[in-house]
Length: 246
Image: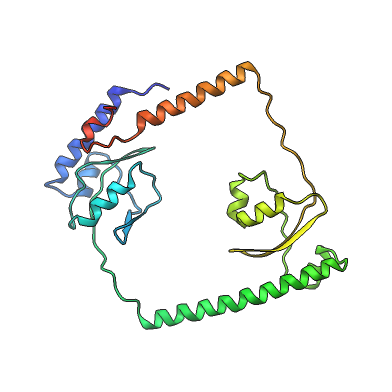
């Protein structure tokens, strides 16, 4: 895919036109008139230090620095760029830091103490389950006799299995991959709870056959991706018209 220089400049011209019109008009109405999308989920800068936003941009630090000193209604003088387009920001409001109400603090402390008690109880139950397994009881039998114990079947496709790491945590994935069929590990404590892991089966992933054609194609794809990342990288200059002047 070859970047379209003319289309890129047309997009930049439209962004400049939008920013010029919003300087004297309503942000949302100008965006609607120009058929531009207004984000439904606002970006939040927390404590003048951290950007809380689900959309990726290439230089979030610049947005955070601008928001720290901007006034309500002010529009960022330079658009931000991300993998999926350009973004123009307006400071909607400033929420002052307020002391946390005492009742809220009290409830949070009570919740934390309750969580600690439950964690301790779960740890004791996990240790009891491990002792029962050492005496010859199976996981299935123990779970059937203890309603609070849940049996989960998990398939893990290597250390980079993002889905498994998200479901159970990195500690779980690492411990499971270290087991051989029939071996048991645990209790393993994660943010999700306590686990006793049994490896039922293990299968080595087949490595792809690397021939000359596959190698050349892989290198071409890698070089193209590096080139495209360089092309779409936002420059350090604040003159957004020179975004491609590397």
